[in-house]
Amino acid sequence: MATSCFWEDIYHAVESGGRIEGVLEPSRAVILLDTKAGDRYDLYIQTEKAWVNHVAMDIHAILNAFRLARIGRKRLTIHLYGERLVDEERINSLSFSIPAKVTLARSICTPTMEEDRFRLLAVSLDRKKKVELKKRFSFGKPKVVYGLLLLTFLVMWVAESVGSTFDPNTLITFGAKVNPLIEQGEWWRLLTPMFLHIGWFHFAINMFALWSLGPLVERMYGSIRFLIIYIISGVLATTASFAFSESISAGASGALFGLVGSLLYFGLRDRSLFMKTLGPPLFIMLGLNVGLAFVLGASLDHFAHAGGLMGGFFVSGVVGLPDEKNRTQRILFSVLTILLFGFLYGYGFW
Image (cartoon, rainbow, N blue to C red; front, side, top):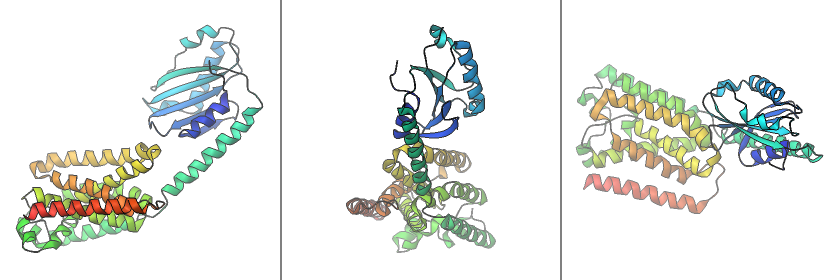
């Protein structure tokens, strides 16, 4: 049995990465989300009941008050605090009618004068972390994302007005990646393919990914850093395709994988938020590209995706997060980015 009590344990849980999601009277129940695990909740309950059946009714009432059935099949640990029950031996026979996998942890303890101090510490620390979290996602508004959406639409509309983007001649005219032309000096074809797409479905699926993923990254990095990551990731993606694929190619997916790379970099800098921020956008990107693979088949440019992912990670290290000041790290990542581009371009050219 644990010797610490209700608010002291909550304080230590917040200190180690938990976030208070709700409080049901300061001395009754608190629900925390474990931001490190990403799929685990902890419910802390202080009870004054004397019998297990009364405790069971109390727990079910609290589960309903917090609507914990909505968390689905996640993991839930119920931490139960209070004096020893008359029929304490029956406590482990309790069951809970919610989808989550429930574990019961029992602590027999009596609240002390320290409880109020730990309550204030826990609430204060949780508030401070939430302010920091809000700040983490307020370095920019998604202005560049909407500008890129508009620009890419205009390019697609003009290209489709002139001819079909399924026609190689139209793609070549509007800047698709064509290896022999790049070898002849048309280096700008390393940049323009990210604004051109092969058909409206290809355009729609990539722009949906940009609309879903872009605002998150722009808010995390700020508009200027976001634009640098997107453009250079797109260039590195095209360069990787130039190095390893002879096919004509176009599309923003390489730059979009660069944004995923920027989230991977963010995960190294702030592990406690990694799963919360990376998970949904990454699943969107993977799902969209699986769907696109069925439509485009072998024409999907996996080399561009890999180049964009690596490029986004390296360039994120170059520009850094807005609150990073590590100059040595930026120099290292700058060297890695230049070496990556040099290798890909040199390999493709020679």
